[in-house]
Image (cartoon, rainbow, N blue to C red):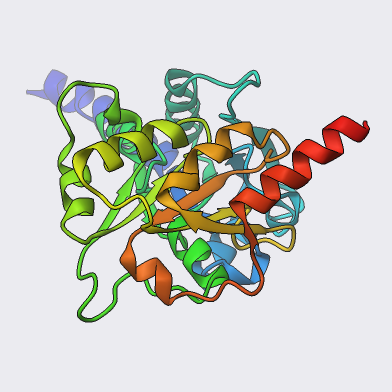
Length: 285
């Protein structure tokens, strides 16, 4: 019995030490934060608070420097960009980085352009964090479709005209069958196409073939929500012109549908005129 009494305090002491060590090490936390379209004053207050308290900020290539500069000056900044034609960190590498930082007990902001839950690969990052047992949260941001609509004073839904909104990249148009969102477009839904410059011709061709009128209104915004935004308008039949406009280097958002006709176009340029101007400039050069 005495031998038992002598040995029992050892594991009890060790347990106390372990608990004390656990208390000393802060729990890590990862916030997947939407940076919005780029203007600093379009960040949510919660996003700003988390940025100012962050120890590490892992940011996308499309997030402007002015937004990143709002972070805690002592924070470590890690670029984890994904941009077409440029070297980028793989999604698996980003997932592993977030898990590693969280396990180290760091306060991390994963800063994404737009909204994390809309074409932001937040699902893959959340799954990795959940599997690793790392605390995390989502902070929404203004997505590009909304920012582009604001540029045109354009109602994405309009009573008696459009009661549905589709958000798509249009990359699923390659197959023989028409995707469900394209059928919705023909039924009157407003369609917002993300990252749509390179496949604009495919989108227009397939929708026209499926029965959407070639004169359906189209609004196009490059760098929507930023001071350097450029706006264009036209019809569905004009949309393939985007592929020839090589001067468009920023993210392009295309909005298609009858509701688009309710927008304001005095600040935008017709797609046909924009292409003609670009072609003339190239000839002079």
